[in-house]
Image (cartoon, rainbow, N blue to C red; front, side):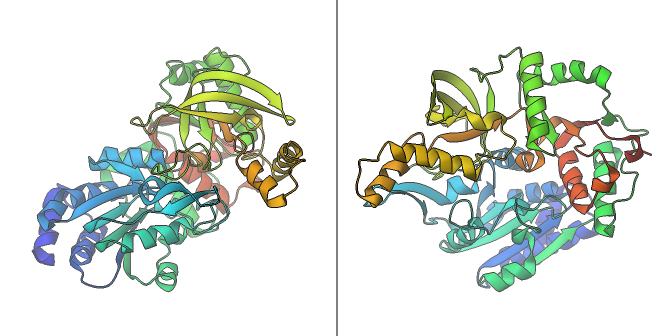
Length: 469
């Protein structure tokens, strides 16, 4: 099959008349899939409603005609679930595909890059705006490792998909995996890209996508002038007043189907308020964590995964349900619980018994502060004061279950970064802004990302009247 025939097959699988931008992407993909050049990479960038998902769905359908295999990947379990839903194929998180967990000769745990045994394979990676090249959290660059993994296979190629109007990785001002020039300069690849900007006509019937597009256009123009929202004529995006809030929250969360709704906040402090209100007033829970609570992991953890397990670690952003609480204790100046967790995005994985530190559940920081981490480490070190060897003492601390306790927060209300890559039918957005001087380009990017998490309905909470036409 040549590129012209492949282009024809893509159009046929697409199912309706493509936009000019979509036609261009189909031509590019036809060349990319047949390319004989070294390490081929294609960046498919596009805003919400521009048809990225429809293109990927068509692409997956035509690959068997090329006798080409496909591996679908995403940065988080939520994003992998969304990718599976629209492609009709199983998708994995990047870390569960490319890493495994082992121990070194000295007993230390280590995350190791797996070897790519795939041949003649296309790796499709969605939500690439979330992929970081930073080594700060894991000691490894996820982007570097992804590239190394893909190219270690025979005749493999990489398709990166994302929306650069969304929030970049935490601590970065841009998304490195969507920056063509950066990729070309950093890696030995042959790369091309295209950005879809035309919102599909049927998508503009949605108030969610109409307003997301409006915000994104302000973002592109580099200004944050009011008003932000146009709500007239739309039923899928509306203002939620205080009088209706409890009834709607009860409808959203009272049935305990937590895949149905989420509250998105600007800060952990606001998320804490909503989490406790939902837990106590809607779900009838006690202030303390209970069986049935929904938690989110807020820091990568390597301790509780068995040696040889794929994935290498429990990832920051993984969501779990508390199945059982076997013990609570206060020790070393902190509070802990032994629990059994079911990770909701990995239904085939058996429940995992772990120790969690419950102080992070309601803390205002993203995770345990550095000061608290040092305090905990010092308290645990005192338990090994009779160990004269400094290296041996540190080895004992590293293997201490309290030192390695899983850091978690409640997951009914989340900050926007924590929701990225996921989709919910119903999304409540708390403005998090009370003075118009706080409104800047970063806020627009936050708001765009928050709105595009919803598939059916957005409720806007605590937005001042000047946000609206």
